[in-house]
Each structure stands twice: as C-alpha cells, then as structure tokens.
Amino acid sequence: MKIICIGRNYAEHAKEMNSVIPTEPVFFLKPDTALIKDNNPFYYPDFSKEIHHEVELVLKINKPGKNIQTQFANKYYDEIGIGIDFTARDIQAECKKNGLPWEKAKAFDGAAPIGKFIDKKQFSDEKNINFHLKINGNNVQEGNTKDLLFSFDAIIAYISKYFTLRTGDLIYTGTPEGVGPVKIGDRLEAFIENQKLLDFEIK
Ligand code: MG
Image 1: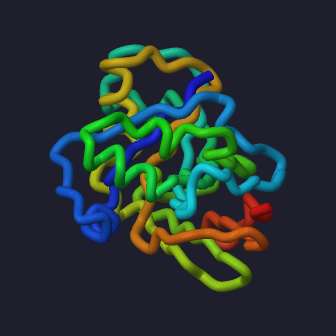
Image 2: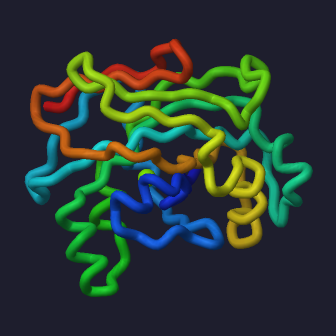
C-alpha cells in the first residue's frame, strides 16, 4: 500500500508556513514503514531537533481506480480516519532552501501515526467535519473540512491521474493551522467530532 499526503490544503496553514496558496493540489508520498498503528508510541528521531505535528483527516481507499472522475470519487472510500503527518521542520526547511525533495523530512520511520477509522455514513455532510488534536490535554489544532482548498473528491480525482489507487491506500488530506513542535513525554490525542480515534505518546 502507499500513503499519499496533500500539502497546503488549508489556506491558514499555507499562510503560517509562508507558502503560496496552491492552485492545484500539492502531494507527496510516505512509505508504509512510516505508519504507526494501534496507538504505539512515536520514538523521537535523533536526526531532527524540530519534529512538528500536523493533524489530518485520512481517507482509506476501498477499491482500485485510475483516472477517477470527481463525481464518482466518493465511491472510492467509505471510511475516514485521523492521523499525524509528522514533519522534521528543520530538515524540511533545508530541503526547501536547496530545492530538494522532502522525503527525509516527511517519510521517515514513524512519520505517519494512524488512528481508528469510522464509517463515512456517520457524517451527514462531509464538507462540515470537525477534527482536533490535543497535546497533554490542551487543544493545539482544530480544523473543519469546510476550509479544505481541495475537497476529498477533488483530491482523489487529481491523484488518480498520476497514480493508480489501490485498496488500502491512505490519503492524508492536509493540516489546518496550528502546527508546532512535539517533545519527548508528550501525549497526543486526535478526535473527529468528539470521538477519540488516536492516542499515543512521544518517547
Ligand atoms: Mg501535512
């Protein structure tokens, strides 16, 4: 399986990163070795001094597809989850400065904790889903899908022009504003509406 992540999909986050607001989706990949499941801890890597959290809603692809049209994209996922797109911000800044790819900053082991998924039928309106991240009990990021620059369906259509999507592929759909550093000892809890779906520690 593969993990596809959308960058800069909330305008306020693009602004806080001093990035331009994109006119088409920005995406990158993480390998399956980046996943952390079952609320296992994240071990802070020794190559970075600035690991940032980015809480994101995640789509799980349920059937193969290529060149999917936007109006049919909704049929390609039936579960929504929440995860963290961990980013070594210091390394990313260096990559950006030198015009290099981001993988070292984004795709390292453990860079994609993923929580439980829920049936999308639970949501009456996918363009109005609240989600948030707590660190040590304090809200640090809050988002709502009404602020997405590119909708779930638009993302799937766009990605599938380039990559065949397969059952089990995950799409991290972008983070709202409020990204920031984590440190050893922190406890991260991520929620969709009021359901806690992810709960793990930094070690
Ligand atoms: Mg992200």
